[in-house]
Image 1 (cartoon, rainbow over the protein chains, first blue to last red):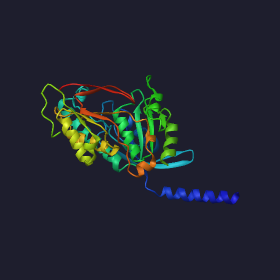
Image 2: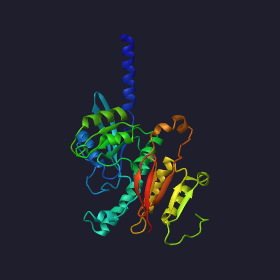
Image 3: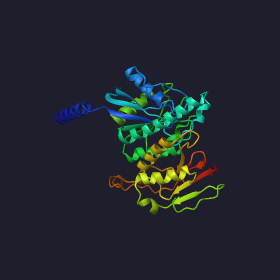
Image 4: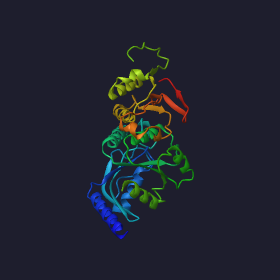
Length: 213
Length: 128
């Protein structure tokens, strides 16, 4: 048995070396606008590198360009995974600049923001088809998950056979409903968290290491 | 739709496009057919829907066409999938994508979803 154990350990070390020499996997953070994608990306990168990815805001479409933070090394339960975190603009099928006028924005700024938002959504879709190796799908657990954008995006991710984790964000809010999200996507693992408050981040990192390691 | 006669201005045109009509088209031809109809203010209903890849391209092309005070994008509805399990790995490996799902697409400022579940889509359509 000692010989077998030694052989297994040796294979395991060789496999570890093989994977550590690989390029870090690019993990895209996807979801609808205002789900807390950038807050999560910042939480992950601050925890493990000390730097943030980008500014957070309650105004929709604050992130209008995909941003990549390279070589984020996460250690959990003896497993180490190095990933590139790609924070992407919220995906939607419609953008109306008038939405932004409600946030005390001048028309010119609102039109510019909506134009940048549309470019950002197109960019996010392109990344999903070409450039990500895995997906963290972030949902606001106070909102109905049965939306067309969620249905389509999960379908696109599944059709590409990308590993995906569903993150039910904003569990610190009173009307959060994690079960509703689990029921909507029973084929995938749902992890509850509050990226803003840092709630349940231990499980978040465990699952990232498990799924993308 | 080229064969359609021009509707009265106070109505809403609905184009029901059969799977057979979509079958011979490339992805971009399908997307063009849909977006040309929607940009004319029509409601487009696809008998068999689009593949996930085509849906992704539809979102991308829609985004490039949005323009302030003219076109705000699309509303699209299909029944939520019950899961990935309805398509086997072999089917996907062989490129047999199960895209058969009734799909309703309309201009974002004219169609509003009232209710949606696995068996029912209820939408309110208004004139421009």
